[in-house]
Image 1 (cartoon, rainbow, N blue to C red):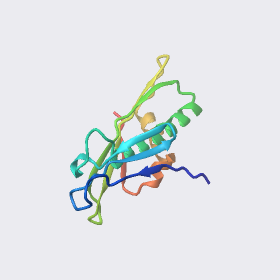
Image 2: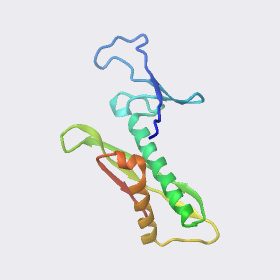
Image 3: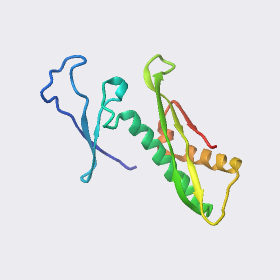
Length: 149
C-alpha cells in the first residue's frame, strides 16, 4: 500500500471570519519545489487567477487516465508521440440533492508517429480500458465520460 500526501496551508489574514467575508485562498504543497495557490471556483467567490479543487480533480483524473492509457499503448507498441486532453468538471446537485462535481469529461487527443493510426472503435476500446484501470477514476462515484471524436 502506498501513501501519497500533500500539505495545505490557509490563514485568515486581515479579514474577519464571517459568512461571505473571508478568503478561501490557500497554498497546496506537492513537493518542496511544487506549490500552487488554490481558491474556490469563481462562481463561489474565488479568483480566476488561482486553481480550485474542481480543476485539480479534473486534472488528477486527466493525468491518471493519460498515464494509464500510455502504459497500455506502450504494451501494445503503439508509437504515441503526443497526448492532449481538455478535462471538464461540471458542478451541480447530485442524486442526493448535494452540490458536487456531477460529471467529469475527458477529451483525449492522441497523435502517433510513422503514419500509424487506430480506428475509432479500437481507440474507444483502449480508452475505456484505461478508464477502468485508472486509480483516480476508480476512486470517484459519479459519472465520468471519456469522449473520443
